[in-house]
Image (cartoon, rainbow, N blue to C red; front, top):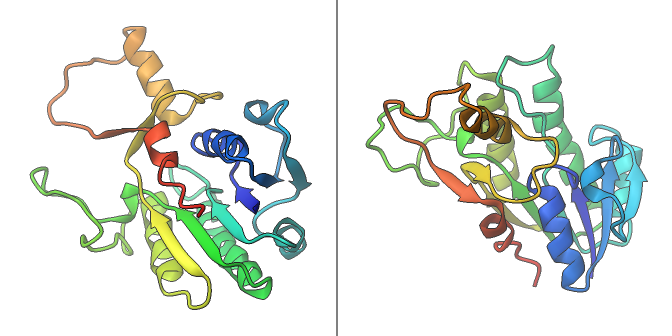
Length: 211
């Protein structure tokens, strides 16, 4: 199967791409910049970005399924509108292209941060209200993108919203990887009040839904 992937070089994306290749699929990736995590992999590389219609058109041509992982992750504000531009408008751009090209399925990778939190005893699942009005730009953008994509008609839509990701393939490293390194180096206390939820990146990509 011909499969397109956005955000392929990222924390989850490079692990997903490896599994897709191992399963015998042809993989086409959208690259804004070359990533060490994809070095040497037999994928077709499309240079461009998620907000460029021509890049999206080239990426999706002839594909049956797209995995959408491209996102601007931020813990420090909206970065002059870039968080919304990539996470919300980029998702809209991708969906428009997928519909135009008649793709069968879109697998969207969201985030637990798309949902409202507050009560530490509350179990968060897909029934929790979305954080549409969150004061945090990243949370708000992921909530808006999730709300949009779940209302798309045409292609089959599957949305995955993992919690904090750990495991192999953290090349850069990610914010979570940096936090774990700081803990290991004694720069961040390990014993803190409260709790945290983790998911192994290999478990996330097991839900790849490529049949």
